[in-house]
Amino acid sequence: MSRKALGGVDPFSHPGTAELIAAGLREDVGRGDVTSLVTIAPDASGTARLVAREACVVAGLPLIARVYDALVGSGVVSVDLAVGEGAAVKAGRALARMKGPLGTILTGERLTLNFLQQLCATATLTRRFVDAVAGTGAEILDTRKTVPGLRLLQKYAVRVGGGRNHRFGLDDGILIKDNHVAACGSVAAAVERARVAAPHGLRVEVECDRLEQVEEALGAGADVILLDNMTPAMVGRAHRVVAGRVTLEVSGGIQLANVRKYAESGAALISVGGLTHSAPAVDLSLEVKGASAGRKK
Image 1 (cartoon, helix red, strand yellow):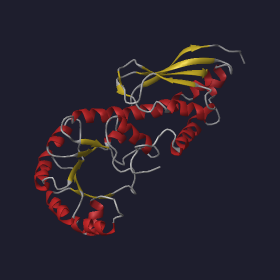
Image 2 (spheres, one colour):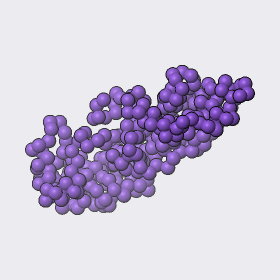
Image 3 (cartoon, helix red, strand yellow):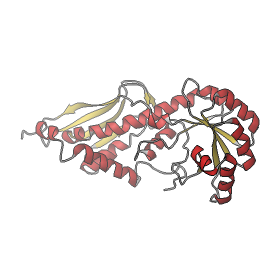
Image 4 (cartoon, helix red, strand yellow):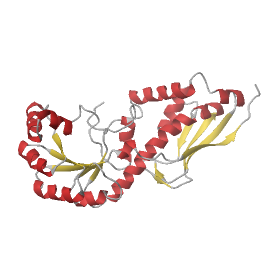
């Protein structure tokens, strides 16, 4: 897979996702779902619905079939999706229907919900940020502040919500942070070293937390300047200094209440770590709607 972007990559068929599902099942199911084993007949079948209990933007539904296929084999539990990825749904909306062995459906319930509550949360929060800057030309980006192991899926959810992906990993781009600057002695020295040694095609981005560093970065040839923890007024001043010569990105302290001010101050890119590390889980539930009792044990 190209780690440059998620475009063209199916996150649900990626080997990393299969490994993640397998690890989740080992963690949750262990030696077996003893509650389902002692309460549900082996041949009992049934149907269940996945329901949104609050308004949200949907992301990750193809994982449902992946979880059940990994749990019991391909096609044993049939999954019909009721909405598409990126759909904005209201509370009470059915998102999917599962049909198959009832015990299996219940065994896979928790892992399925854990994945989808996280991904819908990221897509929903991203959509709110995207809507908040609508018409300004600014774009909402994610960061590397993801749950370990979930980066591919969380970055997918950001795109579903209308955001853009920043670098996928440390090998995807040069982003000179404050500690790199400290190690090199100055913004200018760090940028100059990076430009000399950078692999072909990689842009050089540098973080500035003081306005005087912006001039340094420009003089040293940075392609993108990341303004970190600056106020909208400071971003406006930096925007006037840069005068369109490089792309301006902002991060740090970005919230729904102030993101539009940053966009209107001249930021072209706005990166928000909270999209993936702090989005509140969406309330989803799995509801059994029909069941055959099966033979008693």
